[in-house]
Image (cartoon, rainbow, N blue to C red; front, side, top):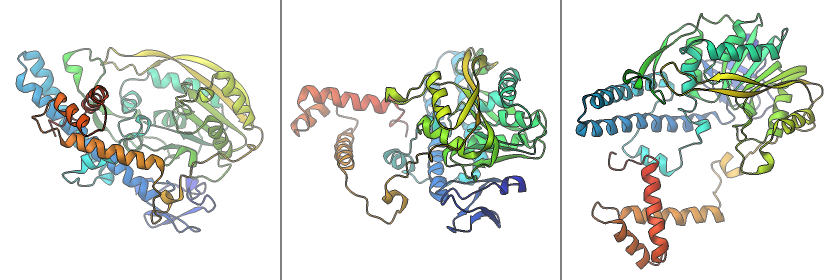
Length: 454
């Protein structure tokens, strides 16, 4: 359960009106009567807590299956490998995938469900795969960077952010805290009573919370470019320099529907976050403004690689500064810093990264509330009928055609046989059918369907 310093700041993320109060092992909203569970000891404060918990359970099922599939693939290669060095590497990998799956399952025990025989296929069909910025394995290497690679990167980040943050700010919120080391370091380097680390990723935040309170957690590192044969899969002990002092709190929540009352924090830090989220930057700036007291400081640290398809929203540094100013801030610091980035001692892969740093103080309330994509009513109220929109009708037709085609794959028919059937059924002319069938099968192969190993 959250400590009293955090509890007094909490606000229901659903109705955004009422404070939250302890209700046994849960937190409850006195207005909309919604209850919020804890994951481990961390409050799970999403606007739809049960639905979001279900989504992450689905993601965990797929994540565990990825380890099983990787182990099967290694076993298949091992059966035909002749070189002793190759066999030794594969044996190390296979054992590591198996043990890593067991360790992840244990860490995420609050999420675990027993999958049925068609669970993986069903979830893939229903689109359980999520953007890389939101999956369980997203930024997994950050755990090793934060807690076992040494102090170079952590010290450099702390020096930059700590200087921009300044002194005298008693309540600090780190949005998108990830593996948690920056929030830990900021808290340990100060005497402030409250630092809150918020993230959506159960694996990252559960590990961060356990390590920060003094536990040691062992997880495997799989370096991108191993320096030696032994480095292909390394069990790493994740540990903090010392247990965090009182006042470091962790919260599972959506950063842009953060479960806090307005003007709850003296400072908000956004590390490597503002350009990877599915929210336009203008609304991001307004959401940060809402959380800050008058005179509160926003410190941003990271890249500006906005991924939007629309060129208008791929902002440069001057546009970022203008948007922050329009949202009610005065930008006092804006500069680049070149720092070491993701430099594992076991990998040949590593680089220097030029990051954008700014510090902006809140001078007035935002001109409007942040935009929120509430989605259609039939997603919020699951008792409502789902309309058959044009896009859903097209998806249904496409799924039926794909299902028919894949059902024809029986281990006997060739690509040419499949093309002939597609053409004879009048689905596509022969030249187009060849390209389409090959493209579908290639995509399934490349995205790891591994139909022959399932």
